[in-house]
Structures are given as C-alpha cells and as structure tokens.
Length: 413
Image (cartoon, rainbow, N blue to C red; front, side, top):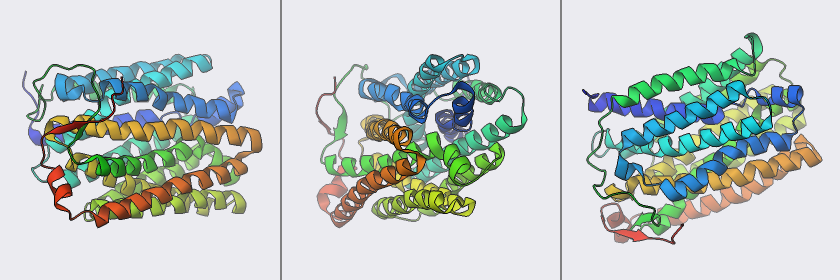
C-alpha cells in the first residue's frame, strides 16, 4: 500500500492530535444539560470528566512506550478505534454508567493515540525542528478543543437531539481520521526493533531533573483543563450570565484560539522561558475566573479564557519541547507518555476535588479554593523553571539530549 509523503504524514499525525483533544473536551457543552435534564450534581459531572484521565493513567504506566515497538501507525489506529467506541457510548447513553464507561474508552483511546501522534509530528518534521513541531502540535490541539466548544455549542443550542448529535458528528470525524492513519508509514526510523514488554519507565541518562520540569509544566496545562473543560460552561452560565450555548461555546473557544495564537509566538522562545511565563499566566487565568464570579462579567470571563489559552500554550509547548529534546530517540515516546502520565494524574485528582467543593459549598467557593490550590502548584513550576534555566548551559544538560543510554526509574508495574 502506498503511504503519505513525509509532509503529509506530519499533518495526518496533527489530525490525530486534534481528534484526541476534541474527544477529551467533547462533553463540555452538554454537561449543563446532563445536570438539568438528568439531575446530576457537579461532583458527578467532574467524576465523569475524571474517568477519562483515570483510565488513561494505568494505560500510560503499562503501555506508555508501546508505539516505540509496534509502530506509531498501529498505536494511533488502535487509539482512534477506542475513542470511537467511547463517543458512540455517549450517543446511546441512558444513564451515568454509560457516560463513565464512554469516558473511560475515550481515555484509553487518547492514551494510545496522543503521545505517538505528538512524537510522529517530531519525527516527520525537518531535522532540528523539535521546537517548531511541538509548537505546531500545541496549535493543532487547540483546533480540537475549539471544535468541541463551537460544534458542541451550535448543535446543543440549535440542532435536534442536543445530547446526541454532537457525539455523532465527532464519531464521523474519528472515522475519517482512522482512514487517514491507514495511509501512514508502518514504521519510522526512530522506533526500536526490540519486542515490546511491560517495563519500567525509561528516562534518558542525566535528564531526570529536566524530565520533572517538563512533566510539571505539562501538568499546568492539564490543571487549567480541569477547570475549563468540566466547569467552563457552568461558570459562563451561572456566574458570567451567558444564556446561549453557542455564545458560551464561542467564549470557551477563545481558550483554544489563544492556544493557537500563542503557540505561534512560543516557537521563538526557549523552553525554560516558556515554562516560567506559562505558569505565571496560569495564576492570572485562574484568578480571572474568580473575578468573573465576583463581577458577573462576560468580558472578564473572556479575558480569563484568553489568559488560560495563552498560559496553556506556553506550559504545553515548553514541557513538550523539554521532553522531546532531552529524550534518547528510541525512548522518546516513553518520555512523552510519562509527561502525560504526570499531567493526567494532576487532572484526575484536581477536577473531582474542585467538583466536590463546588457541590458542597457552591460554585464561587469552589473556584476560589481551586484557584488557591492550583496557584501553589504553579508557583512550584516557576521555581523549577528558574532552577532549570540557571542550569541550562551546563555540559551535563547539553549532553542529555544526545545520550542514547537510558536510565530506568522506579518500576511502575
């Protein structure tokens, strides 16, 4: 079978990234309907959201490097199939159990497809363009989030079957993605010929410190998602005064638009600057959402979404650049998957915690508590980024990106 060119393969991998993020955010605009029509609490909504990262975590632990062995194409195809199952379960869902199982399948699918797709974008890019590929991956991920908000908002507000049609459209898009992935090369040069087995997480020699910085930087993005994705529509409606689902979706799409716009500029900055600026912007974003509730202002909600999108882009591009740049080629997927693992652990814990506070004490108190907790984390990221930048010119750090010999960290089996 003929395969796509290198350039076309780069963009097909980008499509997989976009589909993964669309899948991850797809219930955002229907969450208020589940609460009103099905009588679900905010805690339940955030647990439905959390089923996605909680399903992802064991998969990343056990199968984080599987695409290094079975190939990027096969891993992405299996992931898209799992995403499709999860989305179809939302189409036919009758109660919370269906939604929980559907989100779990979405998590499994994203876990199998997203990291290999990000790595494939690096491998199909020109040599020495890791930062540009990471920035582009961030931009196309924003397209997926924007589609979830805009398509979901429009179909929820104006189309029939508001709890179903949104997911039918996504299922069709995933089907197209599967057909595109079939045309990718079966293997890439940076994959290994060794057979796959469950093993400890592999981190390149001398890069444990920078791995921690890259992973916590990515986690900052995931923590922002723990507020925007499960609670964004609720904040817009209850605190900012939006009464139209499409308007709410458009306001939330600002988050994605600013991810894309900022990721273009992010290519010009060093990874440590990206991490420091991103964490600082994250603090601004979470407190702007708090101010939204105090002022009941759509304008401030818009500014909060814009700040969150810009911070997400810096956090994600900085963390992903570090993980790709300092990984030995044959262990790059493992390194990136491990970064996602840390991020999803943070998200899987953060979202239900904020949801529980909102259910127990109200939306405004939940936002304040979440902003305070997340700010402490973002400050820790800034400190890590400053320390890494200070050490950035050391010979040891410079050698880490070219050292092919892996270190094994604690066995996760």
